[in-house]
Length: 244
Figure 1 (cartoon, rainbow, N blue to C red):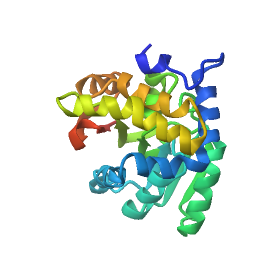
Figure 2 (tube, rainbow, N blue to C red; figure 1 turned 120 degrees about the vertical axis):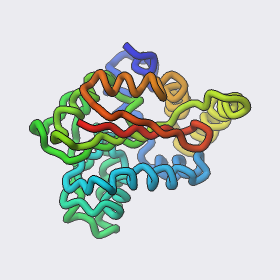
Figure 3 (cartoon, rainbow, N blue to C red; figure 1 turned 90 degrees about the horizontal axis):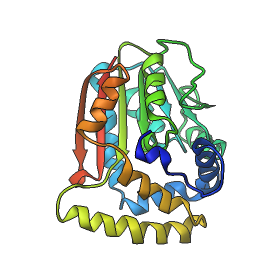
Figure 4 (tube, rainbow, N blue to C red; figure 1 turned 30 degrees about the vertical axis):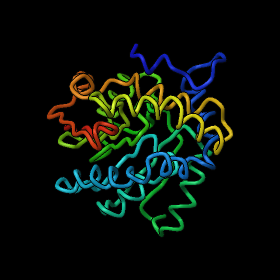
């Protein structure tokens, strides 16, 4: 078991996946606002660069796991022009907001949403040209199982793209980020989201999540080849790209 798998949003009993679902249902109303505010808008650039890394492969069918309110799915549909994009998440509260945003963007013919457990996907083998996860893989209850499921549903020659927040490892960003994650993020998160635990849980999983070469090795163990990674903004965010 990886360290971040042991961290749960709440201290009561229950599987991590159940608690993550409850947490995101609870903070769905403020999630987008807090995301952009806490990252000072830099997350929008990270998303664009990550999605553009798939442009050379022209994926026509995409599965966006942990799609949340659909920001990454909408941007992927706009920049990659797939025929079909499925957003999957365990939180109906988040996806309800996503459906409204997809309708406003005029992308109802391209993007659909499904409630899915990432460790037990309902899709057939070899269903998608690409599978993406943006800022959600550290919430997986079983990282290895989730990655194997992603590998299973990708077509041979298809690609997996992960974008995940990570803790900087070099001075002085490491120390500055620790202060931000332990004090500023939880305080602002509690005030806006009204959830006492969510914005303490999220930075805790960032610090515990494997990154760089370690995460690349975990991805290879799940069956992927040609695994590469790229760090953004002093290591606050990391992108992983892999091939089946």
